[in-house]
Image (cartoon, rainbow, N blue to C red; front, side):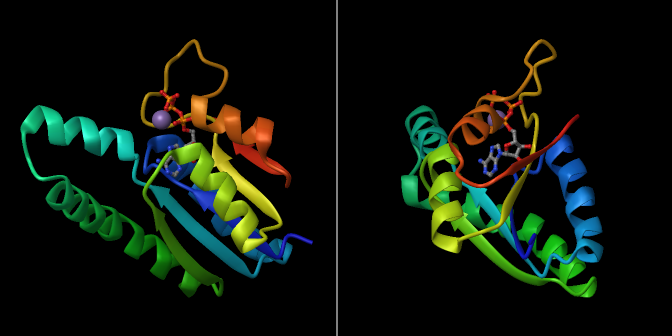
Length: 144
Ligand code: ATP
Ligand code: MN
């Protein structure tokens, strides 16, 4: 029933906590994990404008940073017997998460309640809130 999981990460503490949870799901019959990071196009646009640097260069550097962080996670999951797919998308986090949900036909999304901002007063971050609202599949929210 839980065959394939979508795990979107921004590499924040709460997303890392969600990853610890994902690792335990092998025992629950999960076979495949799709690790997804969305490079927020709006942040790159802003960086390119403020630093007067080339958009493509910034995107490439960003992407290699992302891969450095994802690779050990991929290895760890493989070591536990999961099949792993890594996806990096480059637009708006919540729309890309929903797009990949459809494209990969996952059974469940495992997401952190909060991310990099982690504002104390917020019940959910804006990405996790939109995913909970709009996803078609069940969403498992790992709390901070
Ligand atoms: P906000 O972004 O609204 O200021 P926040 O950073 O505290 O708040 P979210 O961004 O909603 O919270 O993060 C919640 C979860 O959503 C994260 O733990 C992660 O699982 C996922 N997430 C957030 N941003 C991304 C991203 N760029 N790519 C993939 N997953 C993401
Ligand atoms: Mn965020």
